[in-house]
Image 1 (cartoon, rainbow, N blue to C red):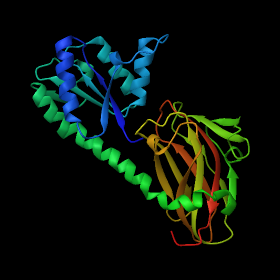
Image 2 (image 1 turned 30 degrees about the vertical axis):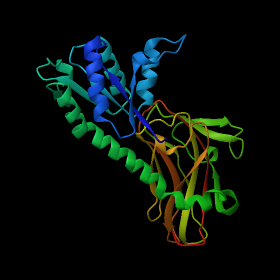
Image 3 (image 1 turned 180 degrees about the vertical axis):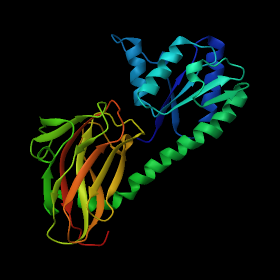
Image 4 (image 1 turned 180 degrees about the horizontal axis):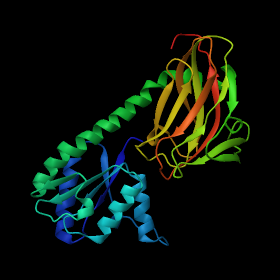
Length: 294
């Protein structure tokens, strides 16, 4: 995704709305981050709360203005907090803060010009840096392309996800999976290992790449959603963000490098880091022993 979006919740009185939006837009100018406002989108036949909930969950972070104690803003803030989304609370200086929000960080502003400056310093720079970090992380693995294209041909071990060990999820029929079956999990249920095992030794020591073939239903989240690791070997772990997936509902290979010292039983694990409303399918784990150093 080349552009990222953030959700903004605020009171919809005309003057406050227009001035606030202009101040926020100016703070993110040139970053590639774009605002989503609930009142600017309409999908017929769908309840407005459902529409707003979808936008909160799909956007990278949210800004919530509690200046005028608008009940809709509190509801949207609660949805974001409950979903574990990154959020920023803003309000005018002198705003009376409800007791249940006093422990949360907030940005207080004097006027719209001051708000632009505060958002630039405390939100836009940080979120822009986070986007660049994710893009850089993607490029780090571009050198694996030659292996990814031929991973099934060149692999020395292939483990079907449904035949490994599990602490959550269940096997499903999937015509897009290599064996027509996959292991499915709903990440919103709990943090736990989705697959692990099989506690087997390898025939040769040396450098390897473990390729995890995974797809998800929603690739909008900038949150860390999965930890991929190889236990029992040197090195071997990788954090996966929702935005690391190029497209939803399409299998994608994620390579994890590790060094096998010639002894010890290995396991290949996928761990759910966040309870987000995301569903995943794991096809297989394939081990490649590259012909060149990695």
